[in-house]
Length: 165
Image (cartoon, rainbow, N blue to C red):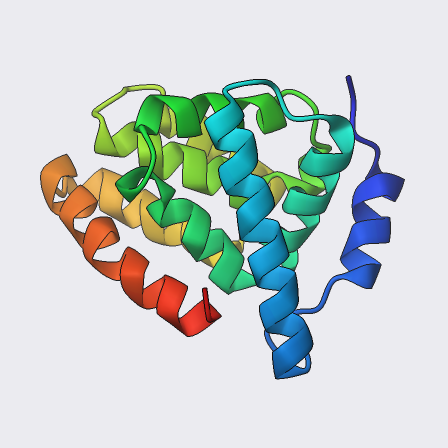
């Protein structure tokens, strides 16, 4: 299974960003979050089409990326991490920064030392990616994982509200 640059780019061209028409953007976000919930709840590997669309959406819509960041407040983090890890194996490097950043944040929150390696992949693919740079500062400052988890859990309902879901 490998997702091609073209597959992701096709979705990237179709999907709206934060500046899209509100009604259409809300519909898109609802459809995508429903698909994400269904896939995570299925506990099965996502197919290439799902991976391509969600990857494109995470690259294009920061609110959706932030939704993914808070998903462990609603679903078991181990299941969310398995879901995101399946992206890491097949998404081309130029699109991996949002996925790798969210996975790195999740790993940090459970004090998994591989968080730094995953974050390194995000920074290598996009050195100016803002979430990756923020997480790098969090990791190097030694901010307690528990405080990071509390912050993401507190922000998640606000992100969902802002998305209209």
